[in-house]
Amino acid sequence: MKGKGFFDEEFRLEKLSRLGDSLEKLNERIDWELFRPIVEGVFPKKVAEKGGRPPFDYVLMFKILILQRLNNIADDKTEFLINDRLSFQRFLGLRQSDTVPDAKTIWNFREQIVKAQVAEKLFDLFGEQLETEGMITHTGSIIDATFVDVPKQRNTREENKTIKEGKIPENWKEDEKVKEGEMPLSDREKARRRHKLAQKDTDARWTKKNNETHYGYKNHPKVDAESKLIIKSVGSNAAVHDSQKIVELVDEKDEVVYADSAYVGEELHAQIKEKNPKVELKIHEKSCRNKPLTEEQKKSNNEKSKTRVRVEHVFGFMTNSMNGISLRCIGNLRAECAMTLINLAYNLSRYVYLRKIGFGNAI
Image (cartoon, rainbow, N blue to C red):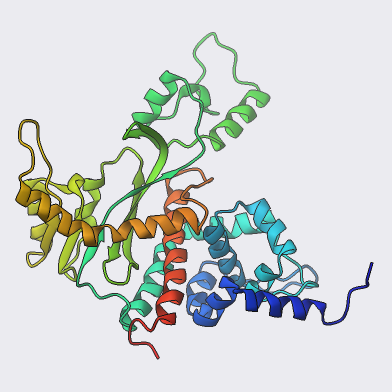
């Protein structure tokens, strides 16, 4: 076998560039230092101690979170792929001789981001840049929702009923009160319950749509109709109806709002108008029993669909290019953070493409 040459790594990177390394293009277009003040602000500054390994650069760790969302990969797989792939190493600014953050370090960093609840701030910060560069037009906004599935849980009917009521099943509680005459819980049983509860998502919900069953959450984005960038988003559990989030998403900047027939209703439209009296609502009309749509209504819906369908391109990119819209985390806070990072990762990729075709007013 031929020995490794001094310039082999450089030659392989050059070949990756010729083949079209999307991560390299992301680095060329994105100013990652933009995010440093927020991610560094999450962690208190510590006095350097003699010995011990210094912490990894916070922007590098943030880029790892984006890398995960772009590829929908778990922490262990992320550690492996960073060690394995030259494209990942170049994206993160690592050499083959550098130490790679392990899965536990990645998990700990993300947990701090979750606890500080700064994912939305990171998304909004990049959104401000998109506004400045004319990438978001506000001439038309599309509102929709998509399911974000999490691993299904095998609970009993009684347990699911209790969870749906917003409570925790008694046999999951480590601190369950012992009734008179009963033996107290052993340390082993307490540990078993503690570990079980740590693996149970009491915030996710089951729902069914078009004969498909989903368990988890929903991502509710508002998408700029012209650029297909996500302007704003909110999350919810999967059982929340799409229409319950539209008022929260509409603001005074929206000129026209497009949505499907899930968002019909006079009361709902009145709430939207109260928030933004000038907004024009182009929401699909819905047929009722014994009252089918007229030809004029069908024609109107078809016209609205030409614009509204562009939101499906966003979900399609997430499903195909970003390897699916699913999560492995547990709990509402983690899920909301992950969904926001998914939307941010999408916007970063979309921004690179829009710059390539000369969209917006950035030089």
